[in-house]
Image (cartoon, rainbow, N blue to C red; front, side):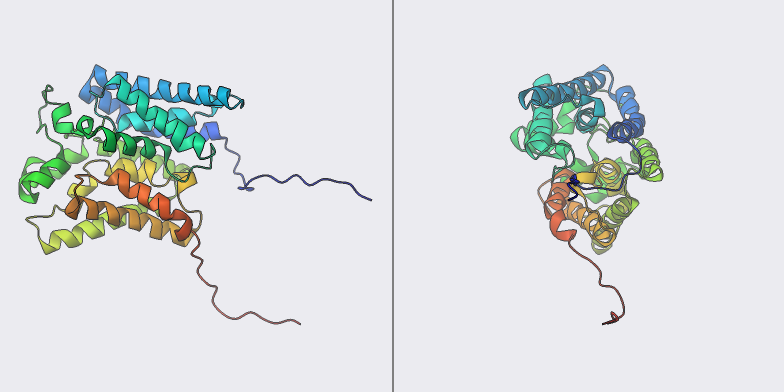
Length: 322
């Protein structure tokens, strides 16, 4: 009798040859333009937040590896990407303890408690951000965070100005071209639209980010914002204003298409992405939050397993060969 044993492992079984380290290294490279611009724009405090966020995220991973008696996994750079993304969403003036608490929640809760690499149903960075934004919202008031800074442009957060001053005033304060080139206050790495677009296109060309999710997400934002704007241009901002403000581009290229929390089938990718963009504009226009990107992406992460069950039926009829 043949006693050959079959070894069964978790999916996916098809591999393109890249390692997890290579995937995350490319994510870091893609984020560098936005990160460098953020340091140049907001100065030394921004560099300090980035350094602390990345190092503390890697520290939490080492601690969890030791406590769970697992092989050290910081070499795959996933915690470094989590920490970098987290830092780029924070104001440059964020206190050190907020950074430490946020990376702890992102790595320990968002990643490890759900099972580690490839098992997280929610984007770990967004889990950390959501907990902090609900617990200490005062630290995410960008207008207050940069009150001691001097800029050559309007030192207000565009989406906050839109929420409290109306679309007409916000559009006058923030020209579209200026928003795209980073002339706004916000997260360290979320303001430089050009750098985020360059990094995002790089990831899509390399095949690390699914273009279907990104394109449908942007389409959901543009179409929904366009319909609101056409209905009342005095109250609702233009689609381009929404596209280049807040966390929109960072979310589109680096958050919404995260592999573990987004669909694997093509048709669900389009539905998932479009629903995320749609939810963001609803939250901004008729909700209480000025941005809404974090909560909108977490919501579609939540319904992703249901969306991913959608399978278009094949055309035609089967042939009975019996």
